Image (cartoon, rainbow, N blue to C red; front, side):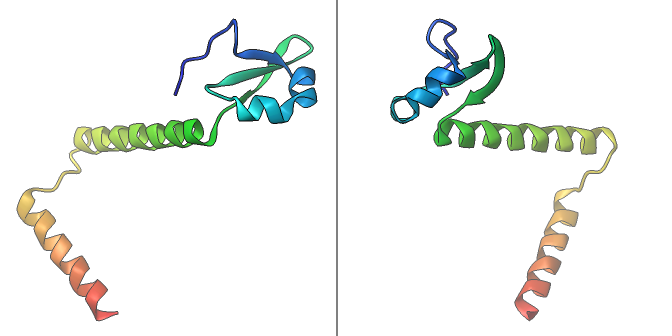
Length: 94
């Protein structure tokens, strides 16, 4: 995702309304929409939104893993293999 450029990436919402198709066609990074001079929203391309949400899911997974490690909720390789085999067995029975 391209970083926000304050000189280019802050647009009054009225201007976006008047030229929405053009802004969407040329969207190359996050754009802050303002209303009455205050930030009101952020416009992202679908690719930037996907990247942002994927990164968030990754960070949440890492945090969960670190919490599990801190709270000693860990499996050794043998226990993991056993659980995986058991799950595969349940899955193949369906």
